[in-house]
Image: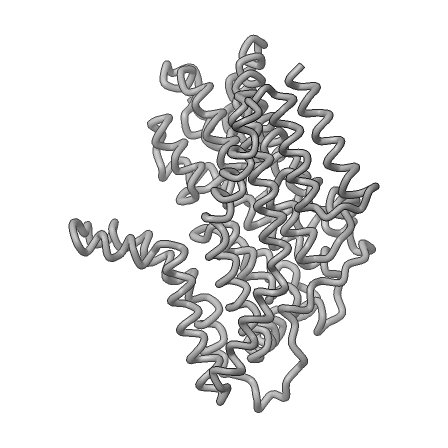
Length: 438
């Protein structure tokens, strides 16, 4: 009955958004309430579950997305994105710009949380798209595939890092195996798959695209790259310094504070305000207008992401994900495949890759700790499964759809297929490596 209820709710959500043309945020609220009632959440707790899910999701993402949108808008209107794009194209040529974007996405994605990386790299993608009149999905999806793979497979991202600790796995070995799997997954699900998407119609949001400026009005190369990549540099330093200097106490707390994503984005925006704004002779009134425009453009995106969080919370509070996972444990499967499958099923139900990974890990942890499976490979198997089948209850699905201004159908055939390819290629890589390790 629980599975049927979830299926009904997912079909209803798709129909409300696609057939009824209802605003996605409103559709999420309606379906979340219906799901709560069908799954047995008491009447007096359904709205509380919806409100908590919406607020809990936005409290983690609102600061990052808003500040990232401001930074991205400034990078665009100041000419920094144009300067970076010109430098990249001059270095590799238009013919190979897609591969340059993939490498950039992979390098940036290793230390950067997916949500931050998305809003930071969108200006790069759109600048290339508009300047060289290239297909948006063809150029953008491979870079975002690189971000997604690093988010699901590689430490220091939250889910794989937590799984390493939970399974008593070796962090370095997990990273090495993860890189071995990540590279082919990114290549096949990114540039290779994107070859089939050149004809998808897409008119990305104009918020990150500025009029092309004369060369003498562009900021310098160093200022452009430094301002855009400062969040990456700060997060990398915050992750590396404790291991290099073995700091403890107050210094460690300061590093952790500065490395917090919200603080990183605040510092980065303040620096960019000077390097790309004040230094470029822009007044604070002009900069405030730029930031205000950026917020207007991402307001609906924030609400949709919050709505997906409400739906996720209702399913979590009902306990249905645990029921499904427990049922799967009765099947005779390789532990690596079982871990992947449980994570994939939970991902389909609630949308969150991180929660899917952690929930699946809790279920199969006894198998790992009893020595029935390689712990490093189980981390990667669950990480791959947690990326599978992204659809309408995943905030990443809606971010991609809204930023690239796609139809739901085209988002399924591009984003959802890409994520599923990553999941299956990741599982295949895990099983291959398992043949050669004990």
